[in-house]
Image (tube, rainbow, N blue to C red; front, side):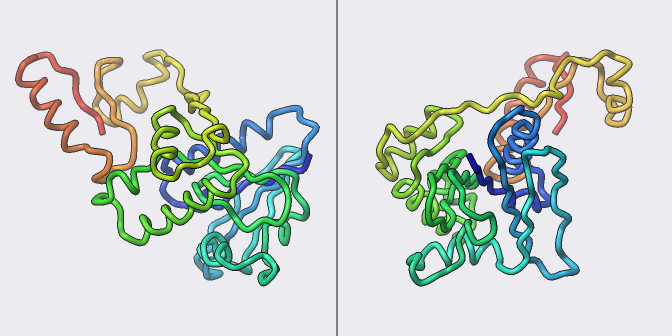
Length: 244
């Protein structure tokens, strides 16, 4: 089989959840002894002086196709609204015929043939609109609505997201697959000696601190975390240090 995968998120400078999901998926697929061929679609039409380098691919079953002739916004949203008979630009224009194409960021890309798979991580754009700009909300709703109608399979990380998609967009429930996210392979216990360079830099004790991971932005509800930590600290004198 020839499997296409959306890799455009890897040009982002913010190592957020979708970036991590895409990078980990590509790395894991590259290690498989698979009979399938993988093509990574990397839309990188920034101005020449602002382009980011494409990710490196070392697997013999995987190739990366960098496209600088069309923007991600134009291809993902504007061309999606044009009937296929009117527009010649599709996934196949860059990758050739595909049996499956996997979109990782909640939107189905223009595609003529083959199965369509899309990953939707959550619906916070719609459930917590106050934390997202209006354009992001509008594009997200447009993308997920099309995915609910056109995708052959929708991958979600939890049963809660599955329930949310069914409630908001009413797709055929059997097309939604719950695939929980795994911990990165580098998350393993480290010895004191291995930990000391980082612990010393941030003045943290070994195995005696609370750690928040994630982007620092309003929707992560850091204020509630800090308020809860302050209450804990007031009630418990030996509260571990909080690292953000």
